[in-house]
Length: 246
Image (cartoon, rainbow, N blue to C red; front, side, top):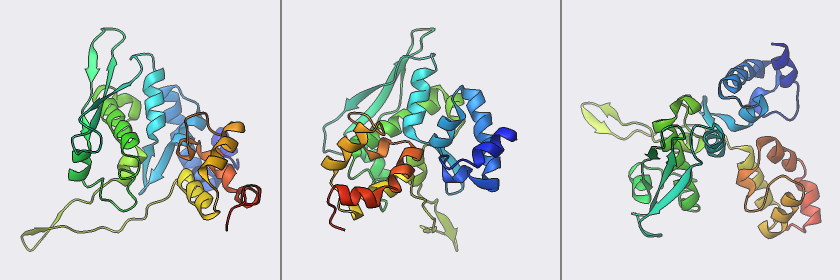
């Protein structure tokens, strides 16, 4: 409780863990961090409450599997032809103790369309399909072969892709849209703020890399929550520095 109280007073922990109301969330994060052997800060940054339920970031889930020591690093195998619905990705790894190859489910664009992920408003499947295929294939693999590492929790992308179940009305099956409030992540807020400020990616990415917020090959999406929130506070200065149009 003492540790939770001190962490809740920090201005660099994610918003869901701040203040007196966040102390209970911190206790859950502490319990999870003890179970999986990760730092509590890493858990708090990677565990995001969406629609009232906790969800892991896909990158954290992948990192947890790769560093647990039980498996070889996850590897992605591509199938089908890019641009077609058959294009997909599956994850493979080996059990270090037995040497058995563990093959995950192949996630395809056709699956994304059939499940309603692709057509959802604001869907990232249309703009960054390969990244989404990798993240979803890794999540499927983890739940199949190492569910104790995810504790049955889905990734944030999976929760956002949730499609409400069908309900019955007067004996007929009808599709009922359930209004939900989607809480944007700090990374999404930062991306939108950068766009609104008229700052170009080719200008801001080298700046972020130079300050250690991301590494080569990463984008704003890959930033930790606390770093994204910090850069959000710097948007006015960045607008002036990079000559934004707004």
